[in-house]
Image 1 (cartoon, rainbow, N blue to C red):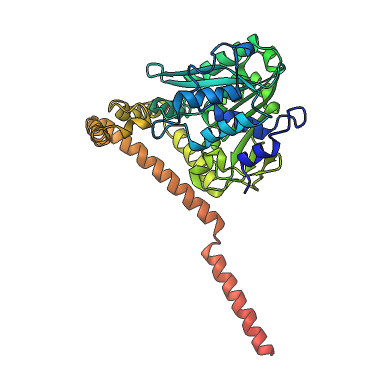
Image 2 (cartoon, rainbow, N blue to C red; image 1 turned 180 degrees about the horizontal axis):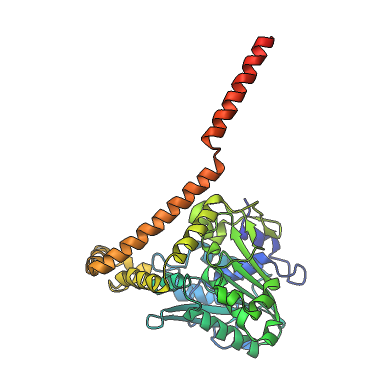
Amino acid sequence: MANLFDYIQEVEYDSFYDIPLTKLDLLALTELSYLPFDQLVSPAFSREKGTRLDHLAQAFQEAFTDVFPPFSMVTKNRLKLLRVLASANRFKYIKVFAFVDEVSLDLQKQFSALCFSLNRQQTVVSFRGTDDTIIGWKEDFHMTYLEEIPAQKSALLYLQQVMEEVGGTFFVTGHSKGGNLALFASSLVESDLQERIVQVLAFDAPGLHKTITQSAGYQAITEKFLPIVPQNSIVGMMLEQTENAQIVYSNTIGLLQHITFSWEVIGLDFKPAQALTDNSLQTDQTLKTWTASLTEEELRHFFDLFFGIFIEAGIHRFSDLTVDTPLKIRQVIENGRQLSPQEQAMMERLIRQLIDTRYQIWKESLAHFLPKPPALLDDWWQQFQEQSQKKEES
């Protein structure tokens, strides 16, 4: 079961002239966007001020010495990926620049991005997906009903600025919410800049709101857009999706397939899967049916209350749960109890409605695949008659 690391080992001595940029190269660089390069990578939109990847890996090691908070997006696989890429001739000379990382409770925004200069003519812009901040997760759920979220506005401004300052062609990528930001920004960037975009790749990423998919900019970029999802995709099925998704095989199950290191590869590409699983399709239908049955005000109020319970308990990142854990859990429970009777009833009603919707869709799907009882009875009676007739003839 080959994965991304096997691919990197296979091509480590091949330049981008020997083997042109692949989807696997772009995934590897996209995964690096989750690492905290604050103070290590210049925020300037300038190739000249970029840091070579091998030098960045060394500075990163010296800055952190592998000490990170629990539940952080700094996983063992991402740390290994940085080391492996930094030692591979294919990647070590890539320059990293224009790193930004913005989290705002007031604006309810989590946004981060960086650029990779392959050479003077090719740049990869990668948007980070949802990190371990509570506000980042809240912003994700806002996408289910808002036409535009703060991170999308920042992504558009970022892409516009970097393309105005840096020449050449661009590849725009992102995983999870980062893929959504990549497509949003590429759809709405000015048309003369959009022409310089070679490809937009979204790795298991939510789609866009209908108002964006109906825009002229979106229609112009769709031929350059490729969504890539695992066979049991959940996140990558949210909102409006195109029909040209590449479905890839993952060696794990359920939501864990969202982790791209589980995606298998063959040669220079992903291992293809035949189709999405029934669970993926049913979960997608559940979320779309549930959100369509509620008003924007109901969804906003629900998510504000749900995430507010955690934020008011002093939990701004999942890693905050590792400090004074019993106290914070008690505070979360207490915050839930302090909701008004009307708020508690509203949250209970919406959660119950979500569960009921999932059950009904599962039941309908099951009925679709199972023969109806009368048909089973008819088939049994016909087979009984045929067997009886054969015995009489013999």
